Image 1 (cartoon, rainbow, N blue to C red):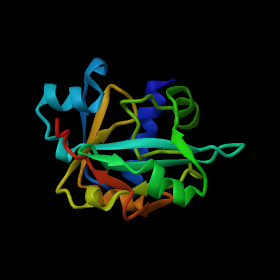
Image 2 (tube, helix red, strand yellow):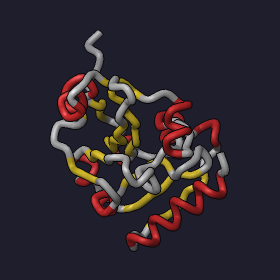
Image 3 (cartoon, one colour):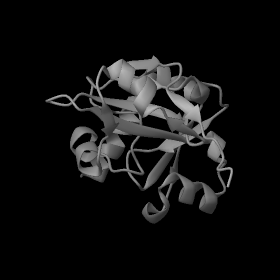
Image 4 (cartoon, rainbow, N blue to C red):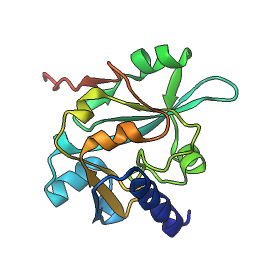
Length: 168
């Protein structure tokens, strides 16, 4: 993966839609959401993850989903119903081939033009969100409304569920 190319693609896409944003440097070893938020002092409620899911069709269909880190993607409910088939999380190699990005850095910005982008409405309720910046070296901070201006973006009710704390 060419990090300069990914960085250029992400920044160009942000400029093209006219969003005000900040790129925050990140130690690649701390790029996963929980580690990043704990180390850098970000609220997990302001952290959004971009997760790529694939159907079990042949060939598989893919969708990118944006949800808050405090929620869980409803893969076996909403995502499955919308894709019309059983589905699962795309693995790291599939994500890299499809997006040019690595897990921990995947962003909703600069995705392939034919890849659907589904957004949980709770993401849009935040004042600002921090999400992957295209690589494990960067995070992107912006008001979340820009997500709806991205190609193939759709707000999907029920995309994510609240994480229920473990009662044990």
